[in-house]
Figure 1 (cartoon, rainbow over the protein chains, first blue to last red):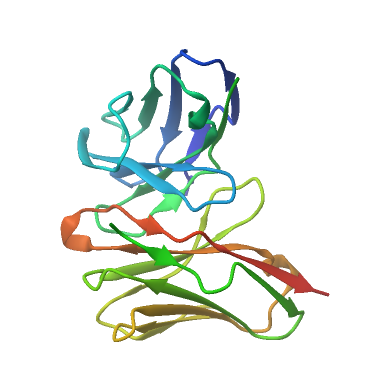
Figure 2 (tube, rainbow over the protein chains, first blue to last red):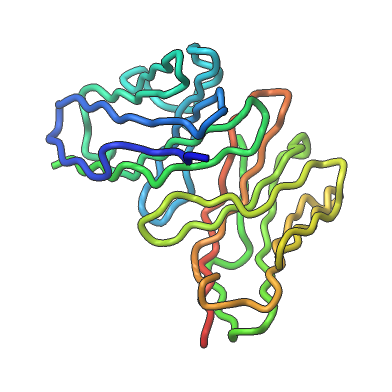
Length: 111
Length: 113
């Protein structure tokens, strides 16, 4: 059984740029959720995708957007990057209403 | 808004002792809870979950207790090992409002050999 994989593992961007992060779901899972984890904090929910549609969103601005593909993989896009966007971005896959299983994240640094 | 908190930010235990990590939640409608372990440089790893129709659930060396009356959750680790050193998060969810989990700030467990 293949777990959740995320790419890239690390990324450095400058303010104002755009970034795309990628996630491959654990085999069989149909739901992907994205979280932002600041240093020393717990993960914060960004949004979830189920059947290629957004299925819930946390308190994040519209410049955070996502996609889910027919194979259940997903992308997180962030436009107009700000310094506060520096964080670990985590992807979790699951069955809808099941336990979420996380990848190891993408560490995004904004200069 | 949601509030999931932990009583102690750090915990140190001797190898072989039992560990207890506590978590308080504020939403009485929460009905699904998960404990995660996060090691440095890695994503959260699922340990054990419990739904609100249960008050206790056991796994391998771990037990989760749920007290809905006082909105409290605990994780007990038996015979703690150095490999258990990590940050532990409780996460809660209200199933009928989607699959958004709210995480606490975490407890850092250090096992002393």
